[in-house]
Image (cartoon, rainbow, N blue to C red; front, top):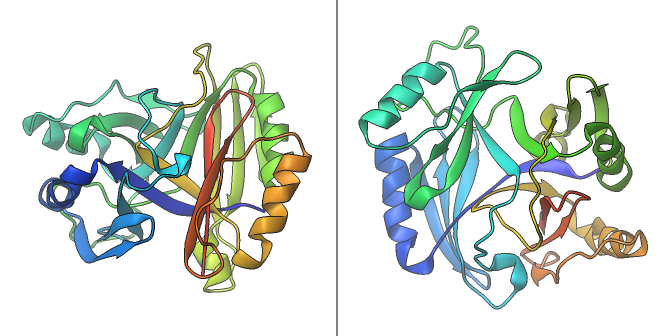
Length: 272
């Protein structure tokens, strides 16, 4: 099983420091460390509620870390308790947001255009008993919806993701045009040895996108280092065309990508 594990927000090399400052000042995230590795610079942003997202510069010769002009149809999800308040706060700061839509389970969501027009998806979820204080942006971190992927045929795509990535199919509704998938959270499984389910929605769309394509806000799925090369070969054996592996997944960090039948880019990483 490919387990969901957060992701990168990619920026141009000369905007790396500016991006970290923007996410700190506007969204209230905290930079807890920066490193330079063989795949370029990384800034680790602690999210207000829980979790870490990485600001990553477009650096290196590998295709996996290049900046592509065509934007794909995979959306990287972040949570808020009050979507209207978050959108209002951001619009007061001249940050654009798309129309608010509703997922099949009733959760409201929209996209915002963050630093340098990077598209982030914000999904509203219940506050429950959480009474902690958060930054005024209300963008708390990762939530119950981690990825939204637009496809032509949700049923066919659901079985494709089950076959190639091991995702569980929770529900498919062809009439309403969606499939609800889930996969384990990598941190909970690999660190805590517990099972926590992350949720992915496949939504029917008539729009098409050509490969190669990219999203600057990249959701990533994890494969453990001892399995990564076998899984990489298995993808090739099954007729897929994964990119060259960037980095070193055995001794540090390594990442690659491939495409689903709708040319949606799937990013994979592995690290010690």
